[in-house]
Length: 202
Image 1 (cartoon, rainbow, N blue to C red):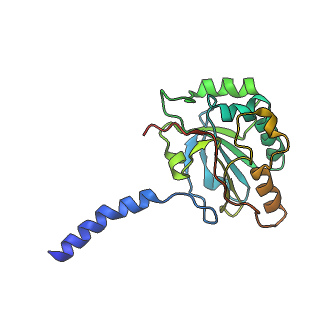
Image 2: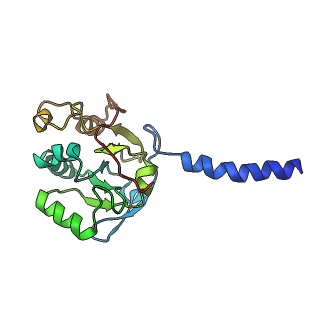
């Protein structure tokens, strides 16, 4: 009876432990599969051998607009994708929540904003967001070609909605990519993200 009880408890606890596991800097980035706004499926594992940036996005968030309305985020996307980086914008807003986008709405938005990520992933169930414990928009992650998460946190060191603060800010994402591409350690691998809370369904 005692053995049966122990096995039963393990069956109950194991899924809870597994569910609690999220991405950690310095460890393998959790794989995922998600559809983009064009209906194409993306698997993180297919980008092994390349640097990958994950950018959590909410077009209704003033912190997100700070980086998009002035074209700053688009400049970063253009700069780094030109160097072979895979840039995935991730939208984890649930239906009915701020920032939720249908595929056509997101395509129209990207065209209007001249956004040029590799793809915009739609994550309305929050599966990818919870896997990476994405907390804010923006919340940024950098994965190296070996599939290891080397940066997680804020886009820069100016946690405001003022567009003028972008100039002269310390951009942690660019710093991480620049250092890693040069074979150097990332100076600041973890920072506290700032912005609006990700509008999950739960």
